[in-house]
Image (tube, rainbow, N blue to C red):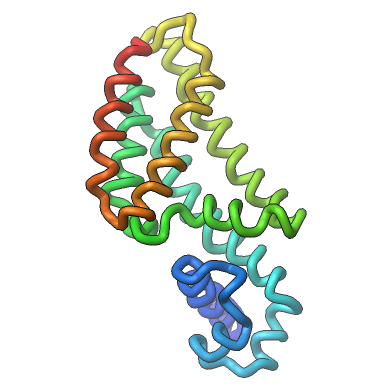
Length: 196
């Protein structure tokens, strides 16, 4: 990796950490520069504005992490219902990228930025749609192979599962504890079993 590419990636990683902890609006460019110890000139060489950097964080940091954490496990799972449950369990209880005390970074960006910036809305919606499509396809696969009842509406199940995930993530953030995830996971298992 060339020095300029390495510097750009380091800025994005450090900025993401600051934004994940403190929020996008309250994290200033000066704070990012102080944390990364790059010059203002170096920052502005890579990013014309804070929003350009924010979009780069979504595309270069969040997308790859979310693809490997949210999408790929569903594509590898043999039993769709187990794959969905195991995904949620991993995201909530084991994933080291997602911190309980800070919630879901995509949800945080969505809540904080979509009212103010159409580009953020577009990119975040693309991420959400990708997860929606893969989750729906996973449920449809289960209907085809007989592990899920034929009368199950895959889109409704997807919306329900995703809503539950985002909701419990926010609750975990509020409580600053993974303990709140356990009743959700237990009820999710019961719900998924009812789709057989």
